Image 1 (cartoon, rainbow, N blue to C red):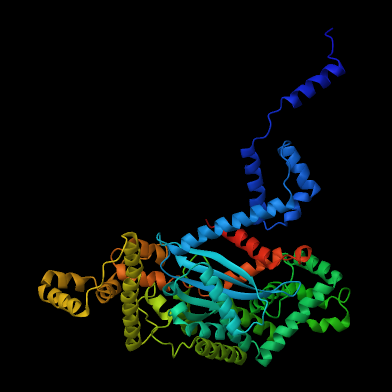
Image 2: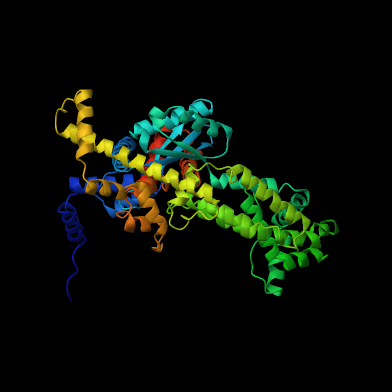
Length: 555
């Protein structure tokens, strides 16, 4: 029988293995620390997560020789990563030819107001890019002047030249409108910047007006009370599940709407219509529902109106979702889709429509026309310019001929202007790299040189100049039948060499998003960061954490 090793022998072996365990290198320590910093930034975790017992146990199991850094060290590492990432974002912006901004305001749990700013541009590969620039604490009143001042500070911090600043997208609040009007008064800083109302918020205002009609409002209120009954009664909820099984209806819970979100009202009505007969069965069962609650059921007229409301509102939800996409060009499709909505969906030619629905459609048409100024829109509107430069809508068939030609003329002027403007920075760089500039010729000599150049110009040079004009490009562009396979940016990537001047205008106009949803989403992240456990977080740290959480995934 083989002898067993003694306990002292085993302990000695263990001690020797621990003694000869390879020590963790400085390189490995740095890798782990960097990974912890990225984990905190990407998942928006509090820095104090490193002090948690569970986290300590995890790290001890993963890397026994690693000593967790102090909170101050993690904070310093986050600041360094923020600084590095800020430099990278600045480099992307510097290489862009034009960009737009979105902004929105949000209030934290401790009643501190924050304003987010995002930027959007098309890179050299014709990809739509977006970055968070700042989440600034608003320590002053939310006036239009103060908002404009903060926007200026953010733009200057990233050294965005005035000729690159295309538009600022914001909601319909009066202070936001005043802020862009203020920016327009500073062309030396903001160039020809335009203010663009968020299409999602504008559509919401249109729909809110339409839903105020008395019969519509009473039907929605009745539906809200009916859903509320089931939400408050466990007995009714259990009974609803039984009725769903008996009637072979999909087992979905009823959805309560949020009064400030019209799309949730549509979802509430849609779900209620799906569950109409199980709901009615529960309400009519005296063993489940009290006599006084049986009147909660909608009338036949109200059920019909609820169905009609859903049919009217559902395409508007789709429109909002399409215009809110961050990864695709959106502003260029806003006006064409609104005209299609009016013509094909809100048409008043349906004879079987109820008076309530006809009145609702009339209200929607009037509101859309007024809020977007569809019937009085100027040819130089960024909406129309972007549509003209989107291959899918370039023929602008929703416009009259005279207006259409005016838009094309504006596109040509913009393309020529941008082409000349983009050439200036390049010339300045060449002069800076070449040392001292040559002294400018006196006016009389300069004039004589121009006259000689004019007299000596060949027909070939004149023909070459005419062929490369933006007007000539526009003429060819409108005749071009090349199909759009994967969106307008892919089309421009494949065809920008054929229309070099129009390409400048395309990057300028197509970089503007139709909604301020990007800023709203950023503030949702800010709300996650500034939660009850971190409501005392310093504003500068909120800015850093939001910046890191969003932008680290983009570079």
